[in-house]
Image (cartoon, rainbow, N blue to C red):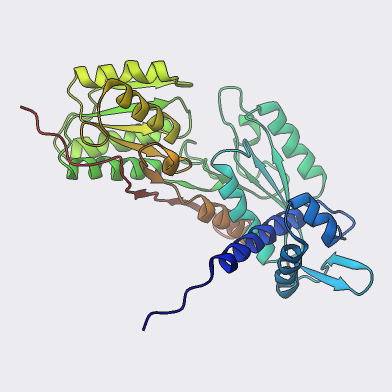
Length: 365
């Protein structure tokens, strides 16, 4: 006997409700309503472009979680009841809100909310000056700790990251740490070298021995990916240097055409690209040249942000972004609770998501 299916309309309503509940949790964590009172259900419905019933169901979820409560005839309020040892505010500083980091932020927010803590979020747009100002502002505002994604470039604020404990409050770095020499700061990051090696081993398992590498310049992630790529090739008895390597701050379609020409000239049958956007450009270049992906060229992306939207859905390396955010929040809470505990530095190994852009190496005649 087949199990009954959830009606499509019911599933869609449930998705909208959960999505709105997540948005309301985030707003509460960011102190978007400092007076502690939520807008009316009608106002939320207009702002979020959903029905009042959807708002009501989302708020019901938050009531069940104890995040908010309804006061008859007055409205809905953020709950002030907190578990012992919680209720403080954590500052979060990220360089971007549009790529990669939204899932990290979601992981941080969910873990903090689960323990009755609040989040103050600041975006620096990759500007070291804004970064320093955000850190100073969050410390002045009384945050109990910080979760940081520092720029760490040549102009980055190295002085406040040079010595662990130099900041006035505990801090945990996210997606930074393995690129800092002998740092004693606590951090949670992706083991990008291991992710790149998994990608190479996937290609080798498909029979590819001539692999190219297409890179968006990055002082944090790219060196680790190059390292993992070299290790994977060398362990297979191949030259650790890809047959073609190119790195640019920002790739164009014309750049991808030129890179593909070099791949073809060197007999490459596969390419690892950092990141998904670059891989998508390479797939487009292959189409314009009359090559098929993956029959003539296998392509692997990195980050798993837009990989499934490519004209050929991309096999890609997927860092555990939400889990990294959640773990960073957990480590910071533990540090606040016990300042003298041993410091923690953790790396999550990304996993490979196999889609349509990789296949067996073509036979050469």
